[in-house]
Length: 112
Length: 113
Image (cartoon, rainbow over all chains, first blue to last red; front, side):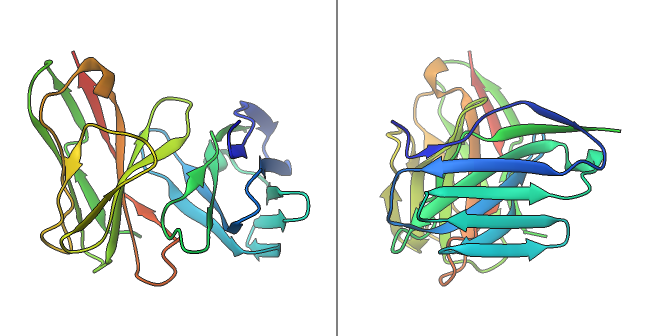
């Protein structure tokens, strides 16, 4: 069983929609939770970073972590065609700096 | 914007050849990493370094080797390329503290014929 599960999609939504992306995990030692965005033929780009539980908001993006359920989410409000990309969740435990465990990635397409 | 560079972007090479994938960063980061990514699959850590003359193998077994003789440079070498090495190789770096925030290069897409 994978430590991190993420539905690969693809997910297709109309412009302006609210998008919800999710990951579940099994390792209770994970304390750092990240979302990366990866455009085609590019490297991943850090989008959101959260330590432990709670919510974090940055513009149109909101990241949520529910450690009791081992479930993390990324919400995108007012989605734009430029948001079309693959979104990767990643996480690590304390002391495992940089040794991230990634989800498979969800491919999102936002149609004009 | 992260300043981490990988060359070449694309490499097509025959079986048995020796190859070196270059990675350089100008941010002064102590920590550097190599991840491997196949289409539609997770990224897997194959090598990491926490500083000069420090290298470790990652969770995914790899026949490649790395070196770190300068802070800014972290090349990956395959002594004898095989078709099973065909993949995308992503280099990343992070600061000594807050090291979970990785900055990635654009990757090298390697195809071994």
